[in-house]
Amino acid sequence: MTRSDEHAVGQIHARMPLSATPPTLADVAERAGVSRQTVSNAINNPDLLRPDTLVRVQESIDALGYSPNRAARNLRTRASHLIGMRIGPAQEGTANATMDRFVHSLVETSREAGYHVLLFAGTGSRTDPVAGYDDLLRSTAVDAFVVTDTYLGNPQAAWLQERRAPFVAFGRPWDTLQHGGQARHSWVDVDGAAGTELATRHLLDKGHHRIAWIGWRKDSRIGEDRRSGWSRAMHGRGLPTTGLASRVEDTVVSGREASAHLLDSAQPTAFVCASDTLAMGVLHTLRDRGLRAGEHVAVVGFDDSQVAQVVPPGLTSVRQPLEQVAVEVVSALEALLAHPPVSGSGVMLTPTLAVRGSS
Image 1 (cartoon, rainbow, N blue to C red):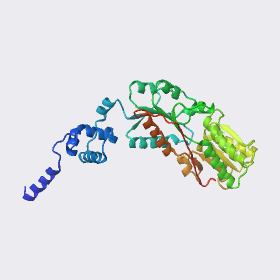
Image 2 (image 1 turned 30 degrees about the horizontal axis):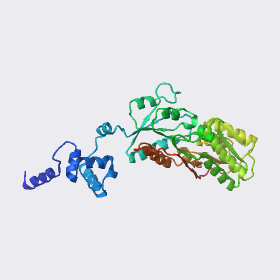
Image 3 (image 1 turned 90 degrees about the vertical axis):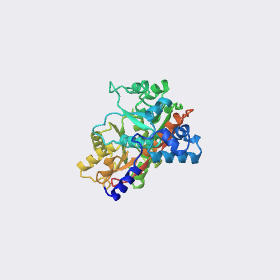
């Protein structure tokens, strides 16, 4: 070994940590010149520290690469820092990927707030709306839940309230609000009626007067809410809606059949649909008849799915602000998990319109 080699090895040893074991809370305290309790407060209760002390501890944590022991911290605080959310099976024959966007946004926003999202499918019967929740509650595996099926009239909200389990709903409590009551839990939703009214006004401003509506069955609260926006915009311009509406299942085939019937019976020059799935059915009908969307007949969907963004000539669609929904949901969860907990009220967000070639 030459002297230069020896010098190089010495530099390597100087940069290597003295111990192969992970740094501990005590190591951080020693480096920052504070007590172990101060380091613990910096991690769990940073508001208790002076800003300069907090910065010094955080710099020591970063320099040492210290990672708090989550399992041990959970035992002390009885908190898992996990948010549970039940997901259903993929819907075949549709273009709906709204929940994919929301889940991604929720995971990102939760991580920034110090939480992780635990996705679970209902165990047992696929038709049991509360399957899967009980196991997580009994094992205290999660701190709170995000509920997404309020529009189906499912009993998750009441079931969780009875057990005093913290949760926030993506979707307003339709039954309660419809009868003039006050919601008993926090919720975040998007104003679907405002979205379809925006879409219909866009078409009216383009010179269309016979604008047809294709929506969901009458027992769908979301479908009827979105239909009301179309109806309000039409009546606001003194235009009739009789014979221009159809209620069907949310499939491409249903959208195709409904649009074919409306074209024959009502001769609309434009369609507003409750979903991109139904709008895709309309595009199929226009293609079958040699008509071009945006030139011969205008089409607007709802949800701004990936399909809407790539299908020729581009499908105009109402876009839900799902990223902001996730922010509001996490904010409400943080309030519920605070000490003392704070129960928020409902938050209604307004969608936008992504205009493309179909209109």
